[in-house]
Amino acid sequence: MSQQTKHDSTRRCIKGAIASHCQPVKRSPIGGFTLLELIVIVVIISILFAIMAPGWTAFLNVQRLNGGQEQVLLAMRDAQSRAKQSRVVWQASFQNPNGVVQWAIHPAGTTPAPSLWRNLDSAIQMDAETTLQQAGGVRRVQFDHEGNVNGQLGRLTLSGKMGGKVKRCVIVSTLLGAIRTGRERTAMQDGKYCY
Image 1 (cartoon, rainbow, N blue to C red):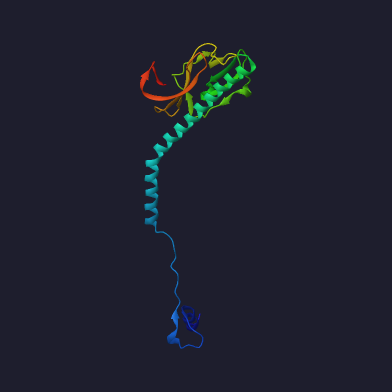
Image 2: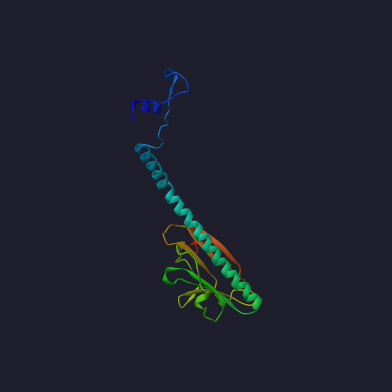
């Protein structure tokens, strides 16, 4: 490359102007971050994540339990409603095979087909506080043709598999078929913390 061409590429001149009136071409700086800036950003994000992770995990656990509680409540109410409509005793059944809580609604005295069982979230377990009547590994509540409880009262308590004190329960509280929800409490009542 000749000296003149090199000189022309670094200066911009107005046509016909004298070389002393030419202006140098401004080059734009190359954008980006330095390694130190990137390290600081990664450290800040890591610290924020470490602060937020336990709270986020607890929030997700509560949401899962709330969803499971809602599904159990709806299953019980659906069995109660079908019993009234069909004038036949219906049952809401709950089991925990392979560590996954499942529920099904069906006429009492029948065994639900495998396709009738529905799963709750896999992070939820049936808690030891569950007092629903049990037969053959299946917890159940039955409703007669008037929607009344046909048998024993009880509760189904759910807790997270990861531990923690958060619990959600669905309680069949009267023989007339009143169903209500409950949550964990700090004081025990009737030997249970979920009421």
